[in-house]
Image (cartoon, rainbow, N blue to C red):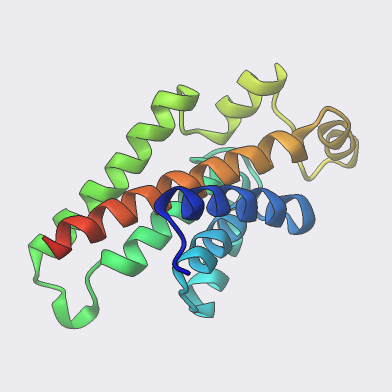
Length: 170
C-alpha cells in the first residue's frame, strides 16, 4: 500500500528527529530522512553535507545545518547538471523551491542563522569545540531541540518536493 502524503510528511519528521538523536550532523540527518522517504540513494550528496553542521564547520556562523540539508536535497533533485549549465529555468526553479523552504523556516523560527537560533532557544550560543560548552549544550537539551528542527525541515522539504511533483504531473 502506498504511503499517503501525510504519512510521508510524518515519517520525514520522525526519521529526521531520530537520525539527529542517534547520529548528529544536522544536514546529513535531514538529507537521510528526506532521501529515505523519497527512496533516493546518493552517498555523494550525503557525504558533501558533512561539514555544513551547526552553521558550517560547527561554528554557528551560517544558516542552520538542517536547512542546508533540505536545500541540498532540493538542489540534487531539481538543480541543473553540468550539461544543463546554461539552463536558467532549472536554476530559477530550484532556487524558487529553496526560497520556499527558507521562507517557511523563517516563518517558523524567525531566523536562519544557527547562532541566532541557539540564542533564541537557549538564551546563549554554544561553542561546540569547547568541551565545557559542549557538555552544557547537551545538558540544556540542544540534542532534543535540534533534532526537532531537523525533523521539521525534513517534513517541510518533503512537502515542497511532493507539491512540486504534483505540479509536474498536471
